[in-house]
Length: 95
Image 1: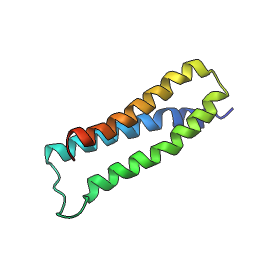
Image 2: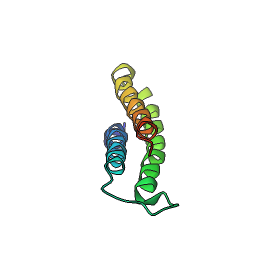
Image 3: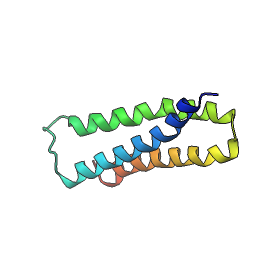
Image 4: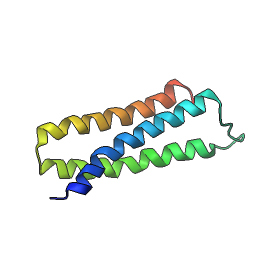
């Protein structure tokens, strides 16, 4: 029905989660120092990526229910797993 939108909402959350994991790695490695008493650009970027990912995952789920649900379920599981992995990285790395 909407092939371009469907492709975008299938791939974008995965890319956003990988970017969030990259931000966690940069923060953990210490390449960018945040000012004291502030989350800094890395924290804000991470939060925007993670919050922006949720509506895209919801749109993907709605569009996937109209298509081949079984095949698209693996993409949705991948999106959710990467989303939780990025949040877990923040806790594990104590960022």
